[in-house]
Image (cartoon, rainbow, N blue to C red; front, side, top):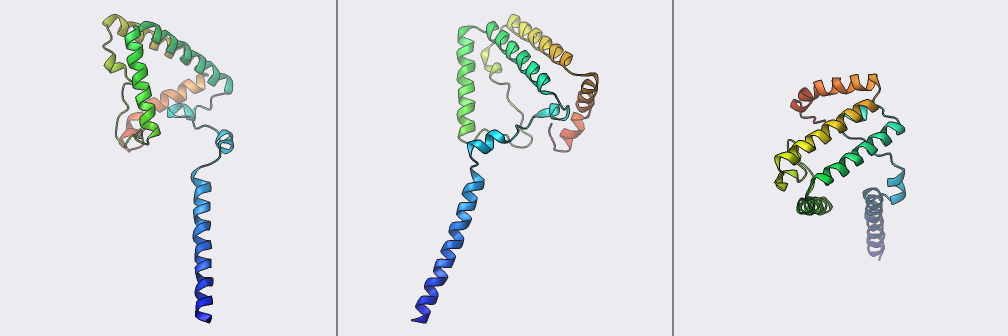
Length: 165
């Protein structure tokens, strides 16, 4: 009788311990939307080290949005449809967990390579990109420009060390 009671107690303890670990894992694996909203978004690339102000971030977002609108104006309706289809395919891959790049894998062209752009379109897009670059450079302080230039010069050595961006 004591053996039966002892095994029931041991079973209850082991069940409690395993259920607790699953509950803790569930809490840490899927944070609530409130926690996600409160977590500051991590900047990517070399810009994370520039300590941009909120005003600078807003200006850069506006410049990029304007450039995107100009890019779209250059494309034909068929090219826009192809680009949108490629974008949706990438989003579906990301949601399925297949969108993760492996170390050393290069990022794609964003769908532009498959659009069969004319030389005139390519020229227009280069001009838009150059204008965007100049406008963004104007947003930076001289110290930020200097820091960005240093980061660009050091980029090849960081990539060789296996630490891209």
